[in-house]
Image (tube, rainbow, N blue to C red):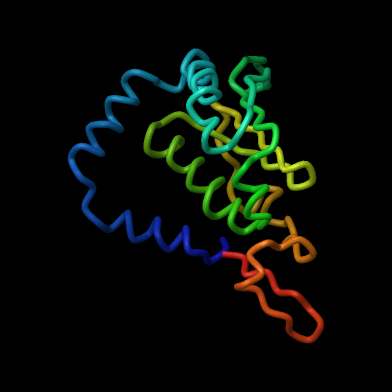
Length: 166
């Protein structure tokens, strides 16, 4: 498991007190949306209009979860966050892992996110548990050294551009 800012923050959150409202919200969401096909499809349907401002245009797509085809996928056509950061580490550690963790562990609705680093799209699959980090293809994804946009915090060292992967 990689050491990262996100993992450190998760450890801090685990040992700190959670506000009773957060606990109540999580319990209420789990009651309203138990991990069923309907809940996964409903969350996909509401993600498209409610997250446009954050990620850009998206659409509900059919995916296969546990051998069953369902409309619980969301294809983000060109993720604004990934396109603007142009950083694998920021995508994985500041978006993918925290979002998967939030839905899967806080709300009890499994979510897997599959960013496509070539075309800057991302597929969200509600109802599908995320793989362990070590088995996730993003763990082997190299940095975008040639197009790294956060160049103010990158350094040239021995003719190598280092990506500050979180």
